[in-house]
Length: 196
Image (tube, rainbow, N blue to C red; front, side, top):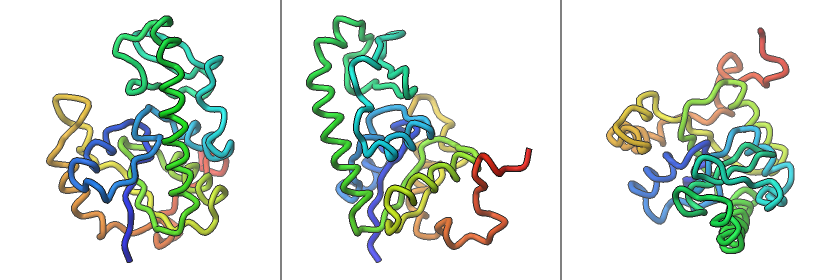
């Protein structure tokens, strides 16, 4: 079976290393280009990728553009050190790019190719459960694996993290078992049923 690789955030770190190591085997989607908390990822699917880049929700704060409603941020769609006038000037082209990437991501999620979905940062069991449930609701027939970030992947001198750790991790992915094959004791528990 041939798997396609794709980054689903929450940052662009995994996307960078996937493209560096796998090139064209990687699907370039919307989550490559922004910071997306797991709750925002779920919102993208619940809303079928619509209405998550509305100008009324965006603000220029601290030199970057953020979506206050969904807590996403968009460092790659707007100029560095972006202020409100820049945001307004670039919004049209940024929205077009965001919408194209949403369409590409949506197509991958409803397509027939099995996907390995890479996470760029550590997430909790509850967050894994939220991601899994959102994907299963959105595309019940999608065959996918959630691939956690390498434990030492965040270590490093820059936002890229530890390149050697990412390379080892990505090269060993075929050995990672999908969540559907894990014993029940290792399957992430949904947030609302997790023991306190």
